Length: 112
Length: 114
Image (cartoon, rainbow over all chains, first blue to last red; front, side, top):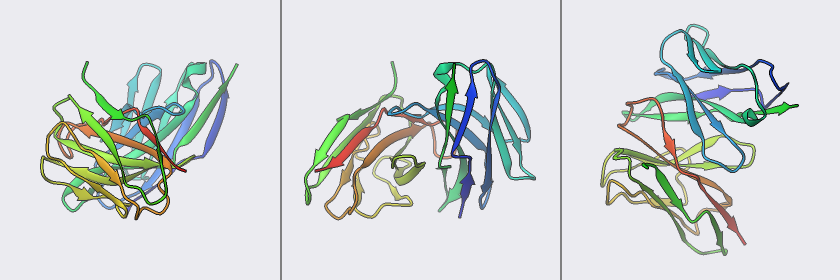
């Protein structure tokens, strides 16, 4: 089986830096993804880590440590529009088909 | 522009009715998926399909059915056997099963039982 743990909520102010952690347990690891979802909207893909280390995409960075079964999403120079839910997801093999399993999500609240 | 279209955006179902949620993509993606999201919860996989005329049950398939007669279309039927169908339903697609790193999601259908 597989499971992912994230904090349920994180708060920060505009301009700050925030880190959202994700720990996972999975039988067969094929990469950690991050998605953003605004209230009532569609999740959108943010980043993906297959190997250990940091991946940077603009204000967002994602880190993976496979030995620790741990990753995080780092958001810099926070803006009000970053208020959303953030989900980590792992690709997990099931019956020969790799599919995404999502965590329960972290709600980020950015205040002025 | 390429993308995934889900319809309707809002759907109301009476007790004992079957309803079908539409999902169409023009991304030429092989794989398609249906997820269910409950308030404050993550996404749970209902069904997925790798290719036309083939689909597999996900983690919470009971009370749901799907078909994949065309590459572009993957409709989901919520049957009367689904005891608690009120939820937000999301359809997604990806280039090839297990390939690529990003799923593309539709904007969702919010189903409410009245």
